[in-house]
Amino acid sequence: MTDKNLPEKFLLRMKNMLGDEFESFLKCFDSQPKKGIRLNTLKCSKEKLESLLEPEKSPTSELSYFYEGKVGAMPLHAAGAFYSQEPSASSAVTVLDPKPGDYVLDMCAAPGGKSTQIASLLNGEGLIWSNEVVKSRANILLSNMERMGVRNAVISSAYPNVLSKKLGGFFDKVLVDAPCSGEGMFRKNDEAITEWSEEHVKSCAERQLEIMRSAANLVKKDGILVYSTCTFSMEENEELVKKFLEACPEYLQEEINVPFGRKAFDNKSLRLFPMDEGEGHFVAKFRRTADNFEYPRLTEYKEDKKDLEGQKLFKELFNIKPWGVIKNIGDKFIIMPKDKLPDFKGITILRAGVILSELVGKHTEPHHSVFAAVKPCEVKMNADFKDGDENLHKYLKGEEIEVDENFKGYTLVSVEGVALGFGKASGGRLKNKYPKGLRLIN
Image 1 (spheres, rainbow, N blue to C red):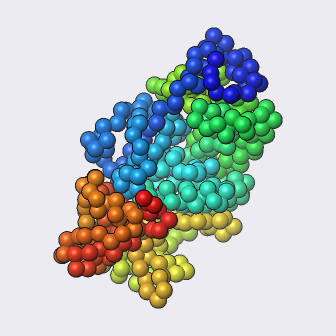
Image 2: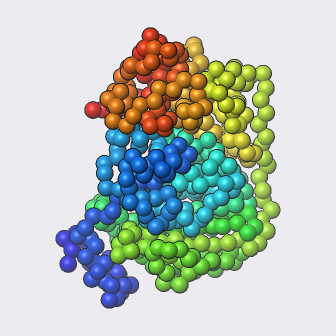
Image 3: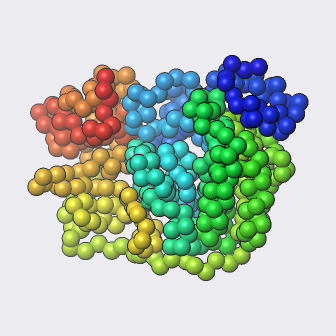
């Protein structure tokens, strides 16, 4: 028996579910889950990450690794070279299989693990729309998308039914990583254990079906809808799939065949138990077979005279052309995603595209967002440091650092060729522009 204080009703449910495997399931609770990281190909190459960190490859994603080291204070982590993610959590996006050019919605996206994985696979082509209804969590999502240098993103904070009404049939692929009872978190989160009850499982299942019914309207014909949870309960997994198919007959369930995990109890979906080096993940895949004529009106952004200042600044900072139209919106200049977008009216949008600059006092100043989204070869000036250089630690704390005396003006700061942030150089010193909310305390 495990030392974990697991609810008796939960144990009985799992024993009925797993039968002969119940004892091996319990033994897993006496060990910690494997930690992991996921490569961000928008900013770092596979070869570079593997040479610097020497992680162990995971089968759940072409981008995922097992890695036990502490990553929170690493400059490479701050730079977005990788995302800290338990590897089996990448399985849902592997099943979704985004391709460059796809329009993809991540319905319940915070804190951003799956959205940033999708962004890597899109490689700047198409659109990743990341939504989180809870505003405080949506801001964390936004920060992670910014750190990972995603150029083609829309971040929103809207209820699923609002998106369903406004964006019917807009997406090629939709992911619903649904809020759940979190049984898969029991090994690493004691709070999830204390919050568990059968009533909570039931209420989660009701909410999940409501979200899925909203999501159903967002997918175009022949598009893919993927549903996932990090819980074990049948009510939130196989039984939810059955209810969804009954409620939305325009969808067919597709069998999942991947080289990890196991077949779920419906013989089509995917499950990952702790015995499978997972944390309770469930994934189901559906294809829409019916037409969907509710396509939203598209907005084509064109530059005008008000945008000339932004174009001039971009040319001064970078040696590439903007990847999207630069628009003056309020006190900011924003580089919009290059693909057409829907009308945002009625949807709470936190950000679309990348902020180029904003008004600080009476002067326009470049924004951290744009320096996080470029490669060192794309900037006029770049101060690159080796991982472990004391200057990086100082920079992450918000201190001035020494740079080449030839650097003058706004300068990228990078680690091992991965963009970290920027500062303003003069006389061999760089005035720090790393955002205060991201700075290290020690």
